[in-house]
Image 1 (cartoon, rainbow, N blue to C red):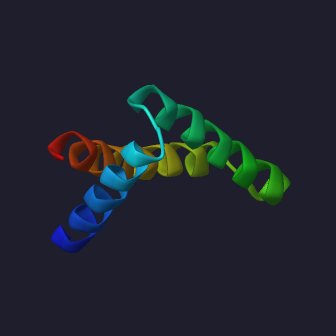
Image 2 (cartoon, helix red, strand yellow):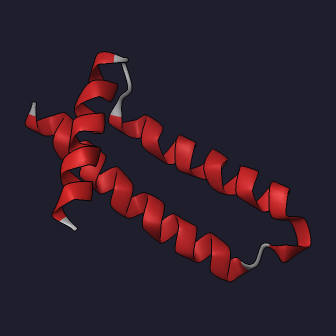
Length: 70
């Protein structure tokens, strides 16, 4: 929905002020997925990795769009 794109765009603009750079977003995604995988252990599947990577990629796109709009 449009509201999440707007909210994440705002977050992206705020992250610029924190010194976050574009190339850092994939690192966070990798760490997030690794933490989820480690926490869920045997319950984590390749399908989970694929789904979370897709969702994180979309969230990142919205955040970066906002970061570059400001």
